[in-house]
Image 1 (tube, rainbow, N blue to C red):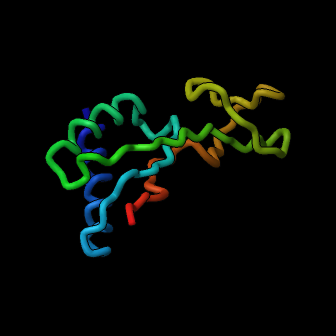
Image 2: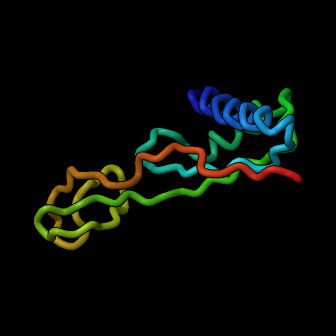
Length: 115
């Protein structure tokens, strides 16, 4: 379960920032997560809950923003939202869409810090 190592890395990022802010209390960690990241959101939340127990961020919550897959269709000359990672074809014309613009994200976007 690689989600545990990802959760631990996310907590390390929060701990580093808390240290830079003189031991500030991180109350929430916001991340963007795409379906092509290889991470299952529910598994990441479970791993995060387990990993945070023995850290200074034990009361911290994980807020996941799931982002859709967006691919550029050469045939239509437009960016389109793709419904399934198993079917990377334009929903309008059916052409294969190899140019993925969004959907691979796995990034920390914000930390909520208690004043």
